[in-house]
Structures are given as structure tokens and as C-alpha cells.
Amino acid sequence: MKRETLGLLVVFILLALVPFVAALTGQASWTRLVGQALIYGMAAASLNFILGYGGMVSFGHAAFFGIGGYVVGVFYHHFDAGTAFLGIIPGTDQMLITLPVAIVVAGLAAALVGALSLRTGGVQFIMITLAFAQMFFFLFISLKTYGGEDGIMVRRTNSLPGLNMKDKATLYWVVLVFAAAYYLFLRRLVQSSFGQIIAGIRQNERRMAAMGISTYRYKLYAFVLSGMGAGLSGALMVNFLRFASPDMMHWSRSGELMVMVILGGVGTLAGPFIGAGALFTLETTLARFTEHWMLPVGILLLVVVLTTKGGLMALVAKLKGRAE
Amino acid sequence: MSRVLDIAGLVKTFGGLTATDHVSLTVDTGEIHALIGPNGAGKSTLINQICGELMPNEGHIHLAGRDVTRLAPADRVALGLGRTFQITSLLDDMSVRENLGLAIQVREGGNFRIFDRAARRSEVWAEADQILAESALGARAAVKVADLAHGEKKQLELLMALSQRPRVLLLDEPMAGLGHVESQQMIEALRDARQECAMLLVEHDMEAVFALADRISVLVYGRIIATGTADEIRTNPAVREAYLGEEDA
Image (cartoon, rainbow over all chains, first blue to last red; front, side):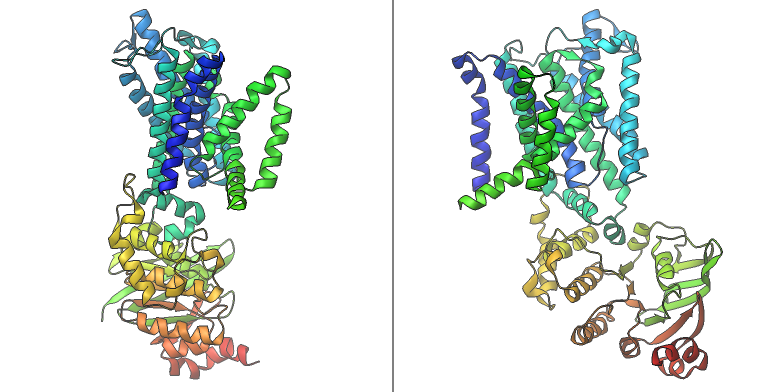
């Protein structure tokens, strides 16, 4: 327990130093890359809660990521134009408003998708979540007010009282704090009474039902919590990249989140973050050499899945075991 | 004596096959009612209807005076129905203690709490540790369920079912696959458990049935052909022909 706390603290401090290291070495893009990886890590971790801990293979998770992002985008659009959403809700650029709203709206979308798709299981569940995500994708493409296929440019990052959010390093640290808080939230969640029920449902749903658990309600709650996490990360991403587009909820984005989870380690807390970091680093490095970067990434994923049985986290555990 | 479980005129058909054919039976408080019958007689189908996994076409099931015929499985559990599975059904990634702890947690409630720590719910773990200490599984508390022997899994299933304090417990072949010594232990465990709840015992092991049951019902081709005490069933010619004779041969 103590070692885990120490390890987390070290990782947090190292990540907090990234903007300084980037400035010293003249690699200004690092801050941006690590920040993005952290946000993807959050999205992947939110997916991992239902996929890894709950055994619900959702193939539409990017929808909630995108919806969270669009909340920030739409708020900014109306703020910029001085209009109101549906003529009632005025725009804003205050992060203390946009992020909670993004979380709630993504949660409502997840409640809708989950309520219908969780009545099925297995392959049908995968397909229905995918279908819902595609519906959202095309819905946002059709919204010409909000840029259609091009999405919304958010010219200025949302403000937080007392902070200069125009400063890249400050924005990065805000993201880092959110990522750390979300990690701790998930850590508590999987250890909670509810987390135990969800773990039980993954292992043996029939047994849990025989114990008197209405598994549907619990799965739906998990699905909504997970969607809310994805909404938060989407909202952060739009603030970080200052851009919201339908691409955020394309099915390939859902696939990418799954790859991050599997690459890092299904059903582990740090796995999705490690997976997101690894995939993102690979992508950006390889993309410099070839536009067919997906091929080596695909081969690597195969190797990791076939050899480690549990992703990079299992590899780390194995190496640790050998060292001791 | 009051009726804990009252099944009346239950019918279940699959296509042309009548798996449950106007079955009526009762289980009274403190009673062990055994249900025997050859393979394919429809015992599991009947159990699954009582639990709510299958809906009957006709008939009624009353649990502690309430009509539960159309209730969901979880709601029946809340009214005091417990069960064990024919093929042991546990949470394989968790230890013996964690399995039992989860069963107790489910009963205690607070299952939607997301900010507490399940491992620190002392009311849950004190009870789990006490139950384990009094059982044969005490020394195996930390073992993962996937690594348990078959007989131990059967014992754990019974402990989990009892920890939920059911009014009536459905036991789907608790002796299946057990060796002689293990069967004797299971019979002892069930005899102790009858203080706590009534039981409907579906079983092939005649020794166990005759040792435990107050009443026995014989199910053949989905129909109950006889109900009575052990002696009445032993001497019933129809039963001998349909079932017991088959085993002697």
C-alpha cells in the first residue's frame, strides 16, 4: 500500500515536470503530446471500468467522449456569437460550468444508450453500442450550426478563476490534476461496495442474480459512470486542442480506446494510461517516418496480446517478479 | 406449520414437449422436501421456474404467502428464496472469503455505494470470518475459488446460500460429483442447516435423500407420480417401476 502511494507520487511529480523538461530541451511539443496522452488515458480508463472490471465490451465509447467535447464546443460557439443554445441557455467559457455540464450530458447519453443496449449481451451488445455511437457521429455531422463535418473551433480555452489558461504549461497542469483525480476516483470506485458487485457480475452474472442482485440496474449505473468519465475527458480534450469535431466520436476512435485498454492491461488501474501513452507515443513517432504507421502498431498489439496475457501491466508485473 | 413454498398446477412447455406437467408441491417451515426423478424428468426446469429464470405457461408459485409467479429472480431472493446450482456457480477470480463476503454484502445492502471501501465493512467481514471459522473451509479462506476442489466448491456454495438467510433453499443436486466422505459431510451440513431454513432438495443420491427428507416427491416425465414419506416412497410400486427399479438394474 505504502509502495503504491509512493509510486503514484513519483509518477505524478515526473509528469508535473514535463513542461520544464520540454522548455529546457527545446522540445515544446512534448507538453502537448503528454497532455493529450493523459486525456486519452482518462477516456480509456473510463472505458476500462465497464470493459475490464464489468465485462461489458462497449464499442461506442467515443460517442460519450465526443459529446463531452461538443458541450464545451457548443458553449463556446454561443459565447462567441452572443447567442443562446435553443434560445434559452446562454454560452459560457467558464470551465467550472462547462466541465460539469459535459459530465452530466455525457452521463444522460450513456443512460439512454445503456438502457437499451444492456438488455442484450455478448456480440449484440458490441454491435448496438457501435450503432448508437455511429448515430451520434452522423447526428453531429448534420448539425450545420456547429460546423457540420468541420466541427467547432474553440479559439480560447475555457477560463478557470485565478489561472492563466492561455499558458500552455498551466493548461497542462490542470489536465494533469484532473487525470490524477480521476485515477484516484476509479481506484476508490473499484474498491467500493458497488465495485465489488460489478466485479461479481463480470465473473458470474447468473450467480449475482441468484444472490438477489438485479444485474441490469447495476450494469446501467456502471455504464453511466463510465460515460460520464468519457465526457469529462472529451471536454478536457476540446479545451486542450481548442477544437471539437465529429471525428472525436468516429468508430475508429472507439477502437483506439479499446486498443489502449488492451495494450495497457484490461482490468487494471494504470493499464489504460500506460496503453494510451504507449499508443500515442508510437503513433506520433512512427507517423514521422511513414503514413502506414498502423501496420507496425497492429503487429505490436498482436505481440503484446499473444505474449503477455494482460497487456503491458502484466509485462511490468512479470519483470518485477523476476527482479525480486 | 406454515407453507413457505407453495407450487400449484405449474405447466411449462417447450414447443411440443411438456417439461413440467401440472406440478403441485409444497414445502413447510423447517421441512426438507426432496424431489427425485430420473434424468430428463424436468427437475432443473422446475427449479428454474421457482427461481424465476423460466416463466411457467400456467400455474402459480407462492413464496411465504406472496404470489411470485411473475416476479424477477432478484425480487424472489428478497422475499427469502435461496438456491445452489447443479454445476457449482461461484466467482472464480475471488477467494473463498471474498465470495462469502460478497454474498453477505449483498444481503446487508449499500450495494450502490461508490465511495466506501468494501474491504473495510467490518459487519460483513466479521460475519464471513465467523462462518468460515465454524466450517470445514476455515483453512482455505484465502484460496482462489478457481483453485478449490470440487467438494469444497459445493461447500462454499452452501455457505453462501445460507449466509443470505433464506426462508427456503433450493438445492440442485448438492451431492453431485462428491466422494463418499464428502457426501457424508454435506449431509451433516444440510442437517445442521435445517434449523435455519426449509429446503427443496433435488438429488440423485438416494442415501442422502432417505437420510434427510421429511417428504419425497417423485417426478417422472414432468409429472409428480407420488409424494410421501421415505417409507411410503420406497414401497410405492409405481415409483419402483419408474425410478428405483431402474437403478437396481
